[in-house]
Image (cartoon, rainbow, N blue to C red):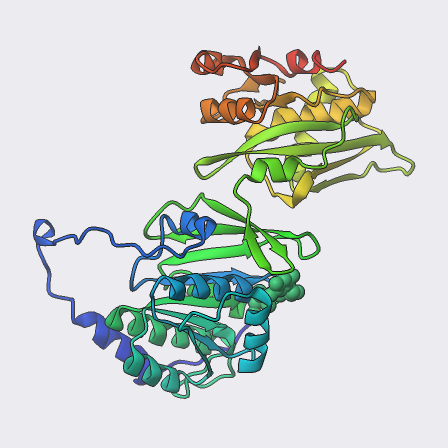
Length: 423
Ligand code: TYD
Ligand code: MG
């Protein structure tokens, strides 16, 4: 149970007043569209997730676990934006000016930018600053530290987070300032986290990744101005975040040659096919109940695939432990990786390697049939581009990839067809 304060008068009615300014109905065909003047952030991967850049006057929430690199990403964005002539204001409620300066020095390249910083948590003061300076882009780091004195509750509480966002929204729309809001998501405290304000902002991005691995994924969850399937891939380096332009190459680097239990798969993230390595380790269980563990893939799906292999291929997996891992820490819920997971499990079970030049694509059904997947052409094309020799795809999709040269395409109608390729 979370206590919520009811706000009477005060800020919520202020928000209502701003919105009522445009309440007069207008004929749809009389609304003039100014050609979309998006502002590029100077960071290609971020532009991609935003749908081609920032729409001026929009509000963007960047959520993620503490320490994942949100402040770093936004500071780099500010650097690029101010270099391209935008007036940028970075408002921090978490770090002192000196701390931000130290981070900026570490990132480098800030010397010729006119970017401004400010440490403030009081929204009344922030509103005054924004009205006076009218910057183009503002970063609020983080929403959990902001407070509005008209609302009771401590900073970070549900009512404070919601009311602070309402005030920022109103400022953003009335002054046409693009606002980036940083929101921490904590495992325990998601309630007071950014979840409650997802519906208020225009765009919600989540920055995720294993804190111990160096790469990070920026994922669009909601976007009023573009697709939400896009991801941006970054790598955390000594000098900040670097864009990973070709994630497939990155995710496949370090793949063992001719080891059993590893198969390359292809998933589509947004408009981009990404190749990745599926690993499986199957061994006799030494305890009563077999262990099934997954990192990066859906565990229920793995149990289902193992049941299919047991029933349709007579493989005795019932007393085996199985561990499945998507290398590089990607999380894949797409059924198109089913076939690769099944092949990896069988490969590990039989201790026979699958060729390193082979890619498996397809969804596996309960009778062991291989079903079609979307965008098969793009997937096969990506495989051909990266120098793969053979691709196993669902038989139904074989006509669609006829035109693609440089790769041998094998159509599989059942898992057995694909398993036969393991030698
Ligand atoms: P930070 O942006 O402070 O995370 P958040 O704002 O999401 O809490 O990032 C913190 C981590 O990033 C910290 O553990 C150190 C690491 N880091 C680097 O590896 N290289 C760098 O250049 C910077 C600035 C940070
Ligand atoms: Mg931070």
